[in-house]
Length: 409
View 1 (cartoon, rainbow, N blue to C red):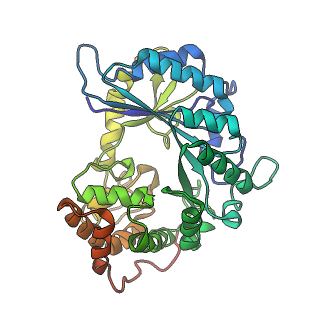
View 2 (view 1 turned 60 degrees about the vertical axis):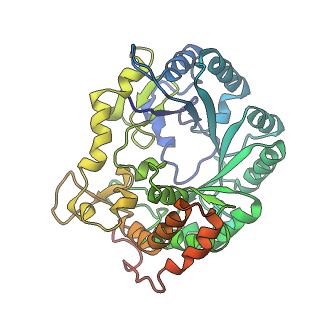
View 3 (view 1 turned 90 degrees about the vertical axis):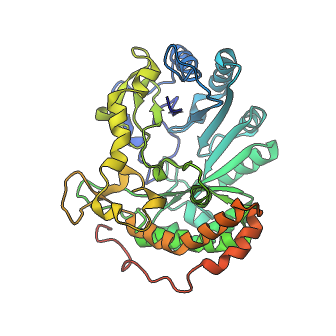
């Protein structure tokens, strides 16, 4: 059995911000009786089953189990909830297993006590920050409309002072996408050494995308500009997840980013009430696998429903993707972004909205990534390999599109 990961939402979609592009806040509609803190018996049942990721009678060589705490906003659960979670992890952890905890937060409630708790217990903290103040505050505001940037940066300072490991989670949207180097250089100068870039794609009922969405052309150019800067100055010092994953793939490693995997279905979501869903981006009634209070976790993970969900990522690729020169890298990306019509007009085989952006980026960066990988496989340090691989960058990369997608705005 392949390992799997579960992202846990102890307070469901509850949040103390009202980010304009948030896709999870509307999930309140799934819980007509309201959202409450995950019950202790559900937390205990999940922890025990999750730390034993094998069917009865089968052994596992699993070495690391990662608990991913998300929301909504997980700090709303309070420190006592997570202290209890750690206690249960210690109780149920098999001897051969190492437990890791990740924690995705908007930072608003991170005071000194929170920072010390997360640092002392080795949580890897991802904090949402969309760049400098004037870009971050465009879409990330609280329920009263007040900006959040200053509070987020204060939280980052508290976390770093406490010794916590902190990643930057950057939602690339229509505002900050126009300023790639401004965003990247701000994060670098602020002290972020690990950066995740997340494209904002909001499909509307009309089939178009929201004005907040990044366009395919913007996404490709955003990645390209940052990649050039990273390759020139920061390899080995700043770790941009998408670039690191792509480099690893060229070195023979399986993609550590599910969007770039051939199939998916091994990253699930547990809601506060015990409901398990196929994926963080597919928390819908039709993707509900069951409830941990009634059905064993491993049974839901290994269900036929979840197997079909995961295999559809590759099985439903359109011919345009199967013939594409960058398929090795993107593998069709996340199915949630596949809604463009294709040449064969198949209702089930949609093209990824970000396709032109990925083609632009990987046609530009692919040769340098390959050159880096070749040198690193021969034992060369990453920074030196990067320096000698810059020659592989195209001198002139022609644009693939004419700016914004026809579905934009």
